[in-house]
Length: 56
Image (cartoon, rainbow, N blue to C red; front, side, top):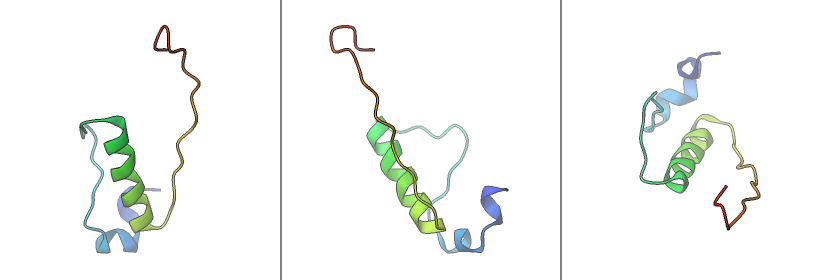
């Protein structure tokens, strides 16, 4: 299914394009979450357990 195939996307002022860049992961998540909501689906962020000593 193409992203552009939804009628509700024509009502959405946001767009997603390959190569978009954001200031942070949180900004990207917020933008994509708003886009998803506008065209009728939801997203979620998976929890990642990081080692604070190594940053991984």
